[in-house]
Image 1 (cartoon, rainbow, N blue to C red):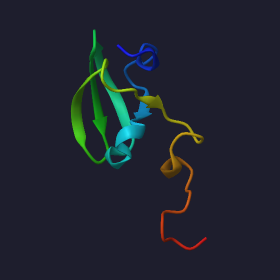
Image 2 (image 1 turned 90 degrees about the vertical axis):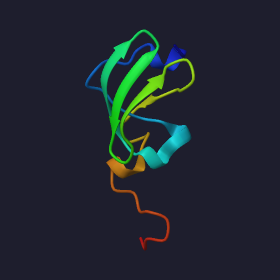
Image 3 (image 1 turned 60 degrees about the vertical axis):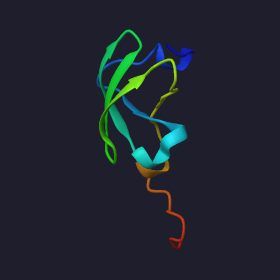
Image 4 (image 1 turned 120 degrees about the horizontal axis):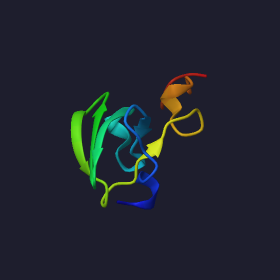
Length: 75
C-alpha cells in the first residue's frame, strides 16, 4: 500500500488527483491493499492501494467542496 493510503479509514472522504473526473469518494472498506470506495461520478470501485494514491478531502484539496468556480464559469 502506498504511504499516502496507510492512514485511510472507512468513512473518510477522499479523491484521486490522477482521476479528478471520479469526484469525491468515501472509503467503504480496506482489506490489505484492496481499497473499496464509492465515488460520486464513478460509483463503487475496488482499488489497488499499491497503484493509487488517494488524498483526504478538505477545502484545500478539492475545489467542489468549497464552491470554487468551474472552468468557464464567471466569477
